[in-house]
Length: 305
Image 1 (cartoon, helix red, strand yellow):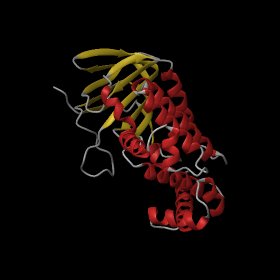
Image 2 (image 1 turned 135 degrees about the horizontal axis):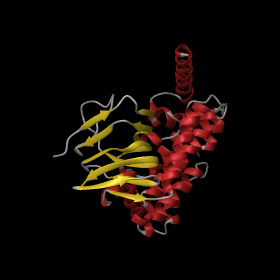
Image 3 (image 1 turned 90 degrees about the vertical axis):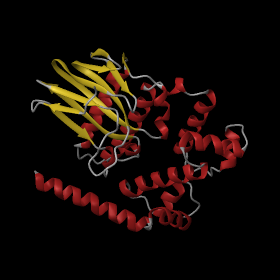
Image 4 (image 1 turned 180 degrees about the vertical axis):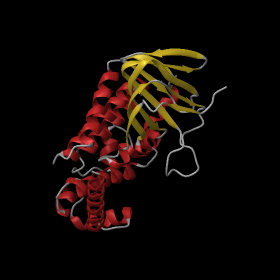
């Protein structure tokens, strides 16, 4: 019954947002996203067997669909039921859900997010596909609109602004999915702790200190961390520190001593050793490569004008 359908009229306007090219690590959570103004004809159908993305090889990737409507109207069919999608509504389609959605009225102004079926969103499999009204629909739309706007700007603070907007978006996604209601008190406390750690990377965090914050033994905390994130506590700390270090290297003029101190390494030598072990390049050489890529993109954009 269900088929892969892609029927988009040339009158439709779609602006895709690739989070892999933006500051932060939203690309690890969001496979693809966009803002769409649809008219005349628009129809998307999926079997639920996965999505194929350019550059992704032959294998299909499973994604969760999140659609929020600003204006106009669409309609969607799943589980042998059909629903109208009105302004202020959110559509949630967990990975593996076959569906068909299409334009219903004269136009449909909406945003969509394809979320990776990753450890952060494991809980989505417990949710049912649904269409519901929520104030978060307009909040998500406005945040996406701001990300799109600043993505095309040339402001000196562009990277910092986009990074903060992406942090807001990721929080809104979790809130929209009712993540807090799906977690036990212990899980809520764990994720709250990890958010605090990421905001205070300069502190000398250890597994012992993290376990103490949770009032549990180190082995118990190890198992909880592995269950919630898919990686060990040490790996989680290392990843968080190095990911923020990459941001500082790419988008700021901070020297290695400043970056090492900011992300929680005692000195630049320790930081450089860990960085090279993880990425195969010294921080200075990695920064140089990133600067060259940014300059190359700027030059390419200039040629297109």
